[in-house]
Image (cartoon, rainbow, N blue to C red):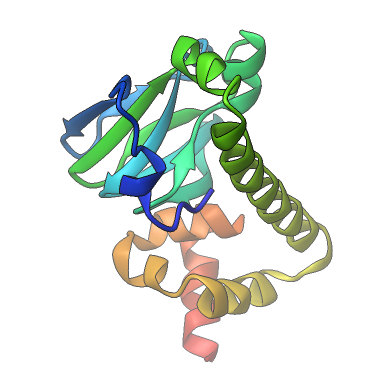
Length: 177
């Protein structure tokens, strides 16, 4: 979810959220853990990933002004199916589930959150469709077009796992361009 102005998003008198600084490689949520917070990135970068057959598979990169949680876990109290980790030193706003539920009673917050949630749902649907219909080369081209900064910011093995390919395949795709 992208938030155009994270500071104004939290323009509230109650200051019930926490701004926390984390070093790189900090696990914010473990696989199997129940998510109790939404994380909004002020500065830095996070990654959602899981393990399959001993390999890390990246679901998403979350950068400045974006929010993330294991929403199924957060909203339903179920175990998270993935991890959330900082990739860089990061400043994060954390919203506990109790505060989130309280804020969802406020129409202005609910409206803002719904816009963010539907946008994120649309992004996830597009990503799923890309994995079904696009070749790895097309997924790479799409990443170049939509989020080229990720290619400069993160290691190749993370980018490869995000695209659903090996690092060797990613190197071949890059060399063909």
